[in-house]
Amino acid sequence: MAFEQPSLKGRALRLLSTREHSRLELERKLARFEQVPGELTQALDELQAKGFISEQRVVESVLHRRAAKLGATRIRQELQDKGLDRTLVEQALAELKDSELTRAREVWRRKYDAAPASPAERARQQRFLLTRGFSAEVVRRVLVGAGAQDDE
Image (cartoon, rainbow, N blue to C red; front, top):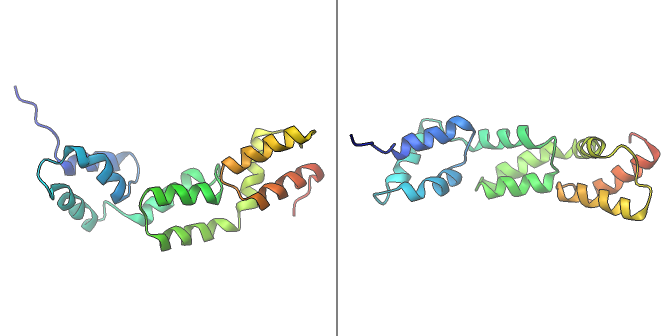
């Protein structure tokens, strides 16, 4: 009994059923299964024409999943790694700008229950927020606010 491998389009649809993928992500994941040159491009063109692949939905998905945990810098990197249009990425980040400080405070609050008591602890908390993609200015404001417990 011969087992037939799924088509490239079938594989792409399976990937898209789990979460939104950009065209570049699908190309990366499916390139090893392409048997005839141009076959993958054709399959992805068809899926894109039918609306199965949408850069806008990828952006919305990333923002929905990641904005509560990450700053704009990390989100920008994630969106760029997906090969999305630069204009679309910048529009998405502009939407996040207003909530950056609030989101950073919430991320900090979930991890730490008190303002840093020593310079070493302050540096540790700063590194934590910086690696989450929050800007140095936002990190400074979070930690200053943590000491004063103010809401600017």
